[in-house]
Length: 237
Image (cartoon, rainbow, N blue to C red; front, side, top):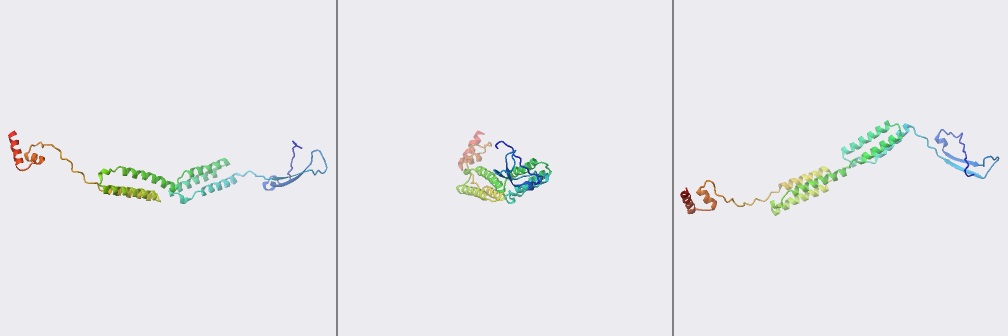
């Protein structure tokens, strides 16, 4: 009847052993207080019992979980130092599991390893970051040159070296290759000769000595003009 409590006896089935309790049970039900056979109701129950694990069993379980977590990362995807960091973090988590006496601590050890390992950049991520950094450095180096200091051919050569460096950095498959491309570009740009400086205009000043020859030379005078300048200078003296 609705609201009635029905007790399903399980004695004799080895209640202390989960593997013996688990199984299918069929019961014939009859209203309480009645006697005789009653065939109106039959129920089949499937019982599954999970017994609590011991601490050692828990440790085995979480050691396997930790190993599975490590297997999600591939050594070939990392630089040697970064992979060493992941392995060190794994060992710390394993030590924590071995020392733990409750499941919560073991769960935290596995989760902590995964969080830390996810922060370690892959080799591809390292390369991308380094490419971005040295491309910016090369851009700054190129910007420091003044086009006015070079002939048309010289500036074209310098620009070509810069652009080739950018292409080499962008296509590099290792940090070492990217750095080598940067250095080659910097050296090639520095090797381009500047155009000769313009002679400019000589300063329009009279030598302090008052030497007639020097004055004449400064003013571009020659011959008799130099002599005349000497006479004037003597008369002034």
